[in-house]
Length: 142
Image (cartoon, rainbow, N blue to C red; front, side, top):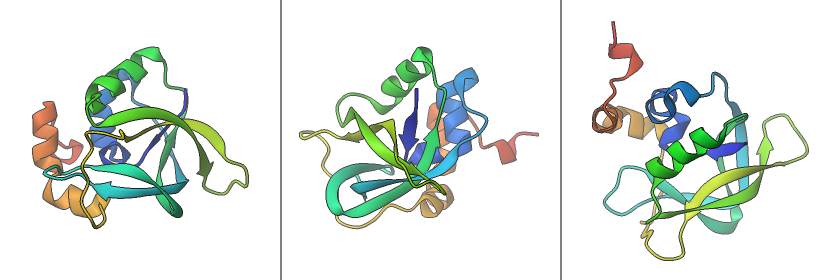
């Protein structure tokens, strides 16, 4: 199974905390066209919403199994996200591939204007976010 991650799951520490033994060793940069990444109101993580003129950079993950999918569905929850199969363009390729993407539900996901940036999130929120998941960043584990 292929998944496209565009938010906190781009971060390898978050992927390991969420997927455990199912976490992929490698991911590849990819782009989702026709969608825009936006911050969720009162949250530190984003959602994607349809926008024909935009695109979202993220990572493509291949080879996940059903157990990994269940873990991702629990992590993302069903209140804000719906799972959709969309075409994603891996970096350096000319043909898109289908991948599962958690997109904003028509109801429930109230987003804000502006953008969401991974580096800013990592600096401001990652440590606390990982603690809520029960994990510490790899750089802090000795």
